[in-house]
Image 1 (cartoon, rainbow, N blue to C red):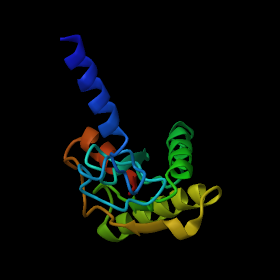
Image 2 (spheres, helix red, strand yellow):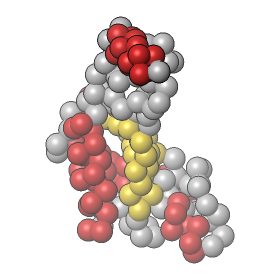
Image 3 (tube, one colour):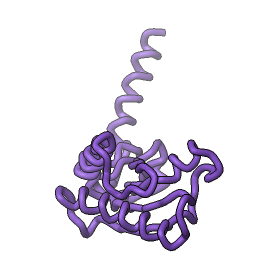
Length: 158
């Protein structure tokens, strides 16, 4: 019995040395659904790039990043420095409190302010900025709570 266990261990050790991971993402090629992943990209258990989303929230009609949201900006900067293969997508949003035209302007200014904060420490060629006004709510604009969730800039790293 000991002989069989020892033989099994020796075989397993021999097999483990032949496992290939061509792109270095720590997922064996045999299990890697996304081969040739760029260096510096976090992957899921299938070897595919893992997207990350962070949200910066704003008060009604405000475009300046409040002090309590600066930690989100710092977190994104730190993640982006680690994840060199990722692009950064900044998307500005507004609630429906004002007119569509004003909300479009507000969401643009929010997105640009987040861009300016990130661009102080990150390569701007990695950053893509867009804004949507009130057209992409993530909660109801009927309630105060819903409106507060819609006043945001979403930052996607992928």
